[in-house]
Length: 60
Length: 470
Image: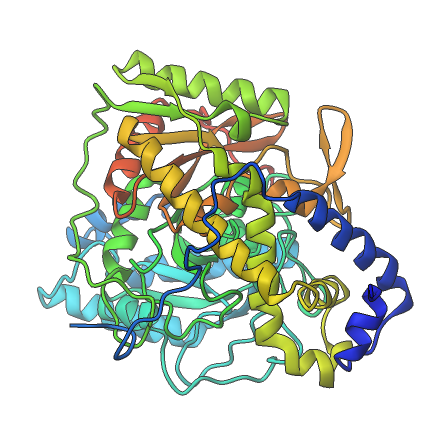
């Protein structure tokens, strides 16, 4: 199942402007082109994207 | 009315103030008079705080006369971007929604500036919520570029860039999430420094995207930027991203670049660049080579995905911050940022986390590059800023999307958190061109030193913004 930009945003309760929908669709497609398939980068699928710092933000 | 003082750098003024040749009151009056006069044309300030500035200038004058000179920024009038809080004063973030927001505390950087004796002249115009690069603000009016009032000053710290370029503020602070210090610095022909992420506390600054945001100096000279960094840097337990590292004497450099190894990355940082901008940047690199530096080409493979990772990260984080208002009062946002907030609702959690993995790889690639070279030089912007109201730029005769291209070379500095400096390197027609110097984490002094070496070659050759040329 593939949801449209309109469906995705309306599902979140956002009020859409008709003139924004076409631009959003174009920009979203542009982002997918920029992402490509990430095949040519050495990203480790098991790499952590975020850190969990125990005990708070600053460990002394 | 004399305008002799406002043309000077902080470094020059500080010597005069310390030597009691001029008073902070005299200087502040000159800056405020000029700012009020120019603001009708440039719209750099959202609010000029004349009364408060005069009180603090008087206080600085008394302290200095009593032998209590605090340092380079004592008695220096500076305006601050309007997303950085002043206690008990309105900070609008350039928005309608926060038009009456009053913070009950000073941002850490403001507190540090007050401690240094700086005279705060008011709040500067910005792109709404810092989410854009034109500073065409629907609520407070467009800020104009002093080099060409038909053109954008860049953004989001456009008011800071325009105010410093037009001598309406001797120096300033901006914020930078994808280039918002360096873009207006390049567009307005001034110096802009995005420090290492965590070097300067962001406590009391309204966020755009937490993991990418920075605060940094925007000034007339490299020395001024170094001095301002010295004032505002330091660990702050109120900022979760603050680094616990020793402060440095950032002004301690002499421009010696003998044996400096300059990295050049052709595939990304010299791809799709305005031909005259490229020529200027390469000529400036040659200037450093003539002073004893060497050039080495470096590969940074993950840059291929930098634009995607920057956009997904900034869009997602910004839309999270504004999600509730996007649901409740979407019509109170300017149309351009409403669109970006809507776009930021689309990436999935997987998209966001993959972008963070790309960031980690990008940091590794940059670290490998910095094992071979000391600094990395590129254009700050691949294009010359457009006219106000246009959403495209001209790239060697081709119309290209403005925002995508304006953040292309600055975004990697935010993704990696590495320090990056933009300095003027010449002009194309009547507009200034900026050059970016990036360095390893916490090596601000190294990039400042390289910038200073270039500054000594006088790349603008005395050219000044057309609006203030007299």
